[in-house]
Length: 465
Image (cartoon, rainbow, N blue to C red; front, side, top):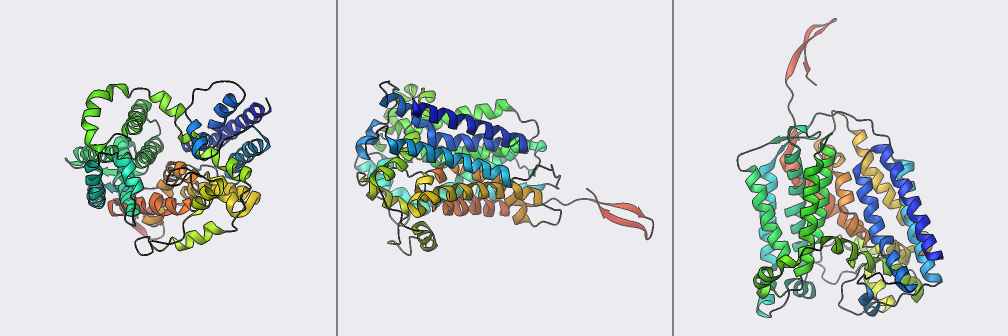
C-alpha cells in the first residue's frame, strides 16, 4: 500500500501545482507540459505496482523486463518513485518562483508570408528522401520493415535525415496554426495566396505518407503539439472543435504509424487494405503504449545496479557534439550508452533513459535536483521572454519570445527521454531551425503614419498604433 500512497500523494501535489501555474499565466502549455512529464515519469508506475501486488493491469510492458531488467517493489523502487516525484515537483516550484505574471502586452503583429515556409519544407523533405532512399530500397528488397531497417542501419547521415524531417514539419505546423487563426491571430498577420491552403495540405499529406512508411512518430507528435499550442495561444477564443478534431486525427495517425511500423515495406499496401479497419483502438494506444514504461524503468535499473555517476560526462559529450557526426563519426556518445552498459541491456535495441536518470548518472542525487531546476528555468525563460518585448525589439527576439513556449512544450517528450544532452536537440532542432525558417517568412508589419498636433512644434508625423 505504501507504493500507492506515494503515487497518490505525489499526483495530488503535482495536480495542485499545475493548477497554480495555470492560474498565474493561463497558459495551456502548462497542462500539456506537466501532463507529458507525468506520463513519461510516473504514469506507468501505477500499473507496475498493480501487477506486482497481485493484480492484473493488462499493460504490455513485461517484455522490457526481459530486455532490460526485472522490477521489484523494493527499497530501490520506492526511492525511484520518490526521486521522480521530487523531480516533477521541483520543476513546478522553479517555474512558480521565476515566472513573471502575464501583463498582456500588445505588440504590433508580424507579417507572415507562407510561401518561404512551404518552399523550405519541400526542399528539406526532398533532401531527406534522397538521403534515405537507398535504405528504403534495401528494406523493400529484403522484405523487412522500413522502420526496423533504417534504425539498425544508421550512418553519419541519419541524424541529418531526422533533422530535415523536423524542418519539413515543425515550422509548417506553426504556419498552418497561424493560418487557422486567421485575422484573430494575436501574433501574426497572414499573407495568403491562392496556393497557400493547397500547399499546406499537399505538404502534410506527403509528409504523412513519408513518416508512415518510415514509422516515425516523434516528428509527427512534436509538430502536432507545437501547432496545437500555437493555435490556442494565438486566438483569445479558440475553436475547441477545431482543436479537438486535430487532436483526434493526430492521435489516430500516430496509432496507425505504431500499428503498421513493423510491417515489411513491400507488404504495406496489402496490409493497409486488409487491416486498416483494425487500427481503431486509439484509447488503448495512449494508455498502454510502452512509451510510458521504458524511460520510467531507467532510474530503478541504475539504482539497483549501483551504477556510479560519471561526473559531468554529458557536458563533455555536449561540447563534442558541436562537431557534426558527418565530420567526426566516432565522437563520444551521450550518457545513454553508459546507462545501457550499466544495466546490462540487450544490445542493438532502442530504449529510453529518463532525463532525471541522465542527470543522476552525471552528478548523483544532486544532479536530479539540478536537472529539475535547469528544466524549470529554461521553461520560465521561454515564457518570460514575451514580457520583455518592446516596439524596438528585433525580429529574432520577437520570434523567439513568441514561439519558444510552444516549442519547448512540444520538445518536452524527447527531452524527458534523454539526458542533459537533450538540450542540444531542443536548442538546435526544436528552436533555432524553426526560428530560422520563420525568419525568412516574417517581417514587422508596416504601420501607416498619421498627423498629430504637438503643442511645441505644431503638426508632426507619428506612427499609428
